[in-house]
Length: 74
Figure 1 (cartoon, rainbow, N blue to C red):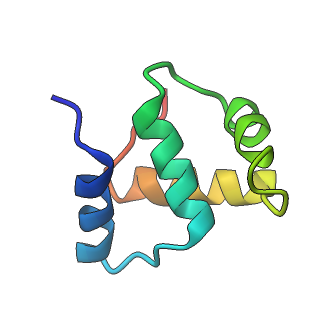
Figure 2 (spheres, rainbow, N blue to C red):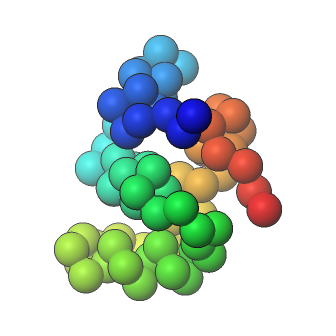
């Protein structure tokens, strides 16, 4: 069973990971999309609603989520 967005937020809080708006949007994107998106896909889709988002932020967020064990790199 796939963890919910709220469960993932709680996991991040328990691991003392700062929950910025951009990190939450990347996490939300990953929970809502069943595919294996690339950084470019995530960036392109989220930049429409977060004009200040950068690819570096997406890379750093994915690295942080991977290191915390919440996502896997495929």
